[in-house]
Image 1 (cartoon, rainbow, N blue to C red):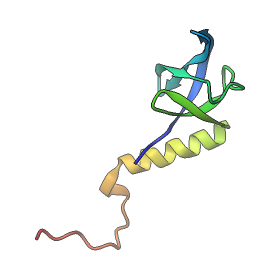
Image 2 (cartoon, rainbow, N blue to C red):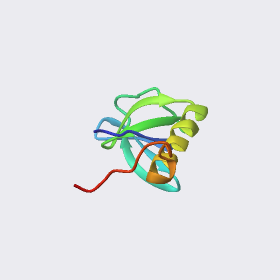
Image 3 (cartoon, rainbow, N blue to C red):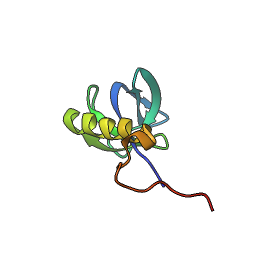
Length: 89
């Protein structure tokens, strides 16, 4: 399974002829290729997968995705309490 993570662009620049940027994820900035989202600007939110921004999204959508990821990170705590627990074989 592949997962794209939303981040906010904090810097845009050219490197070796490619549009690049620094994208912040929860306070950590990573270099990201913006070739697939050349219209993206500082302050925009993008979905990043394997070092490439693959799409833009608005702040509301980014917040929603981040909430879902935080819930998923909780694992069992967010699972449906109505489901039976798995039994060891």
